Length: 338
Ligand code: 2NL
Image 1 (cartoon, rainbow, N blue to C red):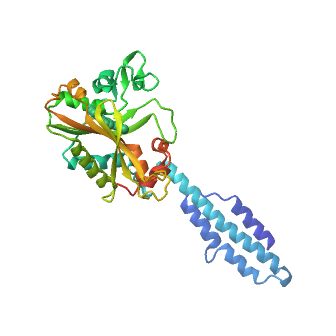
Image 2 (cartoon, protein in one colour; image 1 turned 90 degrees about the horizontal axis):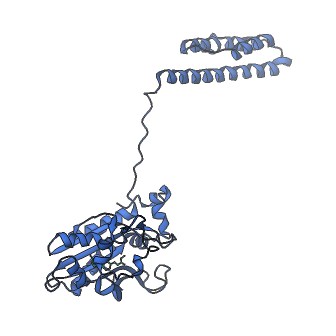
Image 3 (cartoon, rainbow, N blue to C red; image 1 turned 45 degrees about the vertical axis):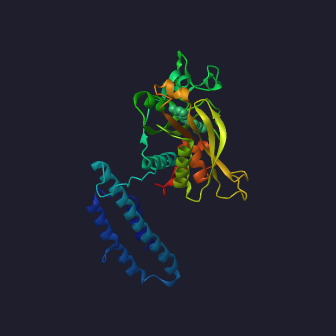
């Protein structure tokens, strides 16, 4: 009987099915009701008690071998079938994973929505600017440090051309091309020659706002910014204005919002209870005149904020560099915002 088992085993080892039909014939030959394996089991009944254990094991090994070779040969046939037709049309398509909004885009859109409700339009302009639109028209003195080669990215062959350091030049273009009343915001990418760290980056995004009409006052500015803070951070938010300086506004101020920890102790506000979120002021009359607006008839306010900073506070992001690395593990955390 051992010889028969050996013979079958050899036959199985060298078996290679040409097609599914041949494989099925092989299966029936060995595993079918009247197949060779059942023949072996019949003969097994007659084996002497002393040999039963050994022969029984051999038959079982043979049975497993047959089953394995059938699975293996079927896979081989499946693969060649796939190759010959180049694609398996029975496979379902891969679902395309849905992306999510970048937190900077999300906050930018929120800010646009808020000011749109107050009648502000959205204006855009070039990222490559000239000195006049970025600095001179905005009342920057000729020796202002921001004009330094080290502070701003200049075009080497023509230092009159530079990467805009704020989106104010967009508003300068609006003031030149439109008559008051002007009510616009300008979101966009800006550039500063700063070393990159957790807190600062050479690229960031800004939204500036400008309102020019007759009798625009600091009270209008304050009330508009209060509405903005309530819409973006919640109606329980308080605002605080601190005197400051910008070349293009007079008077100038910086605005803080109350921290949600109420000064109780939080790393974000460093136990002060206040978070700085934007700069603002009344447009300097020189800027109005530089852009062809009669400063004896019109007044206006302006403000500017960094979007990354706002998103940083809103979502408690620890490092500004995360915005620019395009790491999906970071971006995936914002799937729920829209
Ligand atoms: C800040 C401060 C500010 C403005 C931007 C502005 C624009 C024109 C005229 C006058 Cl055309 N002012 N923009 C005014 C005050 C502050 O930004 O810290 N931004 C991140």
